Each structure stands twice: as structure tokens, then as C-alpha cells.
Length: 404
Image (tube, rainbow, N blue to C red):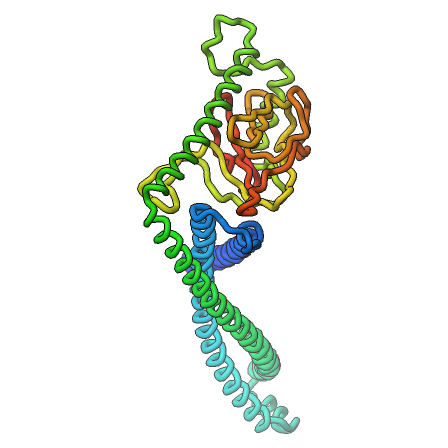
């Protein structure tokens, strides 16, 4: 008997756990869908809102590639949501069928009870039933039976009512689930059509670029060369700052900051805020990720990024992501200004600024405006290149900035 109850409890706990996992998965998919829709809206606002501006072909392909990746992910998530809803619909339909069968059985039993009750409805019949007993004990048992029969009838009536309400609720849930599933299917059809249009447009631009493959390679290499030169200059500036921090010049070959107690505290605070740092822009979308990656047009060409590129609105303010000191303002030949902020042994770099309103040595607070992003007048595109360094080692900003 104990073993039986053990298995019943175990089955009950497993059922609850599976149900909670199902609800959790459903919420995660809904949340992911909301984020993707928000990101696609942001991409359209920041990268595709001004069609009058003629984009560079490479920029257009990169922007389309970004939107396509989000669009494909949204379609995938919508499919997963629809599949989960179909599973729940099947379970609910089976449950409704079982509940209907149970309800029919209860109604049949109740009907029999009513008929039996009708046959013995008169007081005389009940008294005859009691007085025809052979002894007092049998009379007592018959009286108890009449009481239990009456209670049992009320219980069945209550169960019928309970089952009817449950069936109504299940039917409502089922209708809502089917509506939700139809909405997702409709949404996916529209998303797939948009995806097809965007892929066709991307193919047109790529075909155009591939006809000028030689010119394309030159452009990619030139862009990479400029980025590399600025990264080299930033590394030189960081190494100079490290050297300046050394009390013992014999340790000058070490590429690690010698920190004061105050600088150690700032560095510790910076590190403790990993994953929670604010964005360097109030509104933005990452258009190029950190690290080594294939180029969006020429997949065989690998590009290196020491940070992330963030697209934003024209005239957007650039903000410091944490308390720190302006370490340097770099103006490299043929490029826009970059600002480097020191946070103990951590450095944040803000490249491609249109204007700068801080100077070397200034102390800044988190979210303090340090300048404005540069906007390309031909394409209308406004982008910030943002990097984080631990001493001279580049870090992936995705791991540091909140929800990047």
C-alpha cells in the first residue's frame, strides 16, 4: 500500500515539474519573440528609415544581413511557439474528450439515482424499508444507507456541476490557443514574405558587388587596414599609460597597470558590474560583433574586430559606461576622433565621434555625455565603434554591457 502511494506521489510531482517546465519554455519563447520584434523595429528605424540617402553597397549588404539574421530567428521562434501551442491543443482536446466521457458517465449514474429515489420517494416506502428489518442492527444499517445514498446523490450532482465548469474553461482555453496559433501562422507568413523580399534585395546587391570583386576586396582591405591602424594607436596609448603608472621603471616591460588604492577600487567596481554596464548610447543596435568573423559579402574573407559597432540615430550623445578618467583623445589621420576612458586597469574606447566635449584628465561619471556620434552625410548612417580592454587585452563588450 505504501509503495502504491509512493508511485502516485512521484507521478504527481513529475507531472507538476513537466507542467512548470512547459510554462517556463512558453514564457521564454514569448520573451525571445518580443526581443526579436523590438530589435527588427530598431534596425528599421536606425538603418532603413532614410531611403533617400544612397548607401554604400557594402554597408547595405551588411545591414540587410543583420536584419535577415533577426528575421530568420524570429520565424524560428514563432515556429517553436506554434509547435508548443499545437502540443497543448492536442493535450487539451484529449482532456476535453476524457472529461466529456466522465461527465456522461456521471449523468447516467445520477439519472439512475434519481429514478431509484423517485421509486422510494414516499415516506411510507422509506418507513416500510426500515420496519421490514429483521433486527435493530439491520434497521440501523438501512438508515445509514439512506443517509449515505442522499449524500452520494448530492456529491454526484456537485461533480456534474464541477465537470461542466471545467469543460467550459477547457473549451475557452482551447479556443484561445487556436486563435494564438492562427495569429502566429499569419505572422510567420508575413515574416517569410519580408524575408524573401530582403533576400532578393541582398542578392541583387551582392551580384552587383561580385561583378566588381577586385574593387570590393580593395574596399574591405582598406576598411580593415584603417581599423587596424586605429587599434594599433589605441594599444600604443594604453602601453604609454601603463608605463606612466610604473613606480619601478625596471618593470617597464610589464603590460599591466600599477594601480593606486583608489584605482584598484574603481577596477574592482568595474569588474563587479560585468554584464550590467549601461550602453554607450541611449538607443542602438549592434551591427558588427566582436572578434574574428567572415565578411557578410565575401564569406571567404575574415575580418577582425576588437569591439562592436553600434548603429544609432544622428546627433546621438555618446556616454561613458562607468566612472573613470579621460585617458586620451585620439585623432588619427583620415579618421574621426576617439575617446579613451580609464577605469583602473580597464579601458573603454569610443571611436568615430563627430564631436568631443571632454578633455584629457577630466573625471567622468557613468552615463555622462562625452560627445556626439559621427553621421555620414552621404549614407545618413551614424555608428559608434565601442571597445573594452583589460590592460591591453580586448574584451567582448557583449559580456559586459547589459542585454547587448
